[in-house]
Length: 380
Ligand code: SAM
Ligand code: SF4
Ligand code: SF4
Image (cartoon, rainbow, N blue to C red; front, top):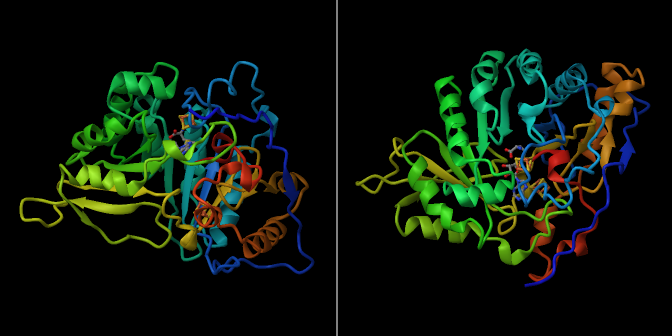
């Protein structure tokens, strides 16, 4: 087995100033980047802390008791997050996903959700508000999240076998409690629930079929995510990636599936519906999705921006530098100035990491591609 190289470098400080241009740029909701991609989706990391140590995201060897998390004063306040979210909505954002770290660890997150739920798009529509969570606190919080105005929840769960899951979260957390969180979310009326499973070959790929059997027909959409070379601490190796085509082949060997059309432009998952006895998609059985970040790049439609816990704007999950919106916020700039500063950042965006990576030789490793930021900091 190849030796893992885990560079212990803190890349959080790498950022560029966000500059207010000389002539103001009033938001039109129609921003486009260098490849004609609009800005629609904003992922906001509300904490860099987590109570799990998933080895593909926050491995214990790096995120140990000596790890320096961000001090509270570095975090954007709820007011700062909401102010930026309002300006992003004016620029075209329609969907906000709260993430982290573990977003439910941020104290009183319901208050932030309430503030975000009051925002409107330029044509007067509420934003779609979602949250990704490991579900450890979901049973306790589901009702409060729903009544604060959260629309949907995505739960991460990497297997049904308790031993496999405890090993992957690396804090000995049981599957049963995650399943209880999912049930509580459904009972609280959070519809359209999704479950994300990161598939690592040789670690949890034996969980693909049990997970599919369990969630089929429950109203929960299971999505299989290819293990990504995000960050610099997880010791990623291509031979641990199980390509989505293989996931679908394994599922189809037992459960008939029909390819479904995408619902929206820029959708990360390719959808497959469970077929009924007539061979057609049976909506009662639901669907699964595959997110093929490694094997089939989908940068062409990528309309996602990410706001880190301390207010750095990242234009790609694999970016090595962000844009410092927090300094601009705290400099006393007014809304028009901040909105004007955001516009050229998106307009200059050229990022398409996964696509470029797919054009690299198959044995290329992330070492060829420069420095990258951790997923727990930038938000998944
Ligand atoms: N803590 C929350 C959770 O786990 O749902 C939210 C943050 S987590 C960083 C967001 C998503 O990123 C999770 O679904 C997680 O499985 C996924 N993720 C983290 N590291 C990954 C990697 N190396 N490859 C693929 N997905 C990853
Ligand atoms: Fe925590 Fe989510 Fe990362 Fe797992 S994937 S360590 S739950 S932030
Ligand atoms: Fe978007 Fe970057 Fe992912 Fe491509 S690699 S889909 S540009 S986040």
